[in-house]
Length: 195
Image (cartoon, rainbow, N blue to C red; front, top):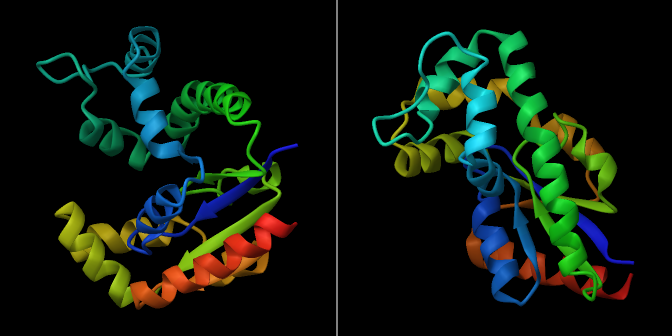
């Protein structure tokens, strides 16, 4: 039975870099956020999402205007819940099909930004948490996403704190120096390969 290893970490923690490193080692990595974006662009899903809102949420090229959707659901927990109710089951189904394709591997990595917040950790055999000091996370995210410090802090405050996540994780890697981070990941991969 293929084990599911959850990989998570807050904005700017470096979990995507770690996921890419694991993939470079030949380990199947499922990037939930990327897959969710692709699924949301399917015509039938797009239509369901549009039906949640009175105003158009499409760009001129008929793709979803993510920024607008984010603004609309940001202060509206009910709408966010409705949106998640459309997207999450589709992603879950997609993942279970992907898992079948990778059933010959001892374990796969499922990278999810909000793993604990969505209860997804319950579906994982083990969880690896990538952490970094908040100041470093803000600096990285500002560089990468063109966001302001305040916008990033809002996102950080909307997710569980690292303290909460650490209690629920099997492995914790502090990602300050990438070389050290990769060495720690290698050690974890060895442990996982034996378990």
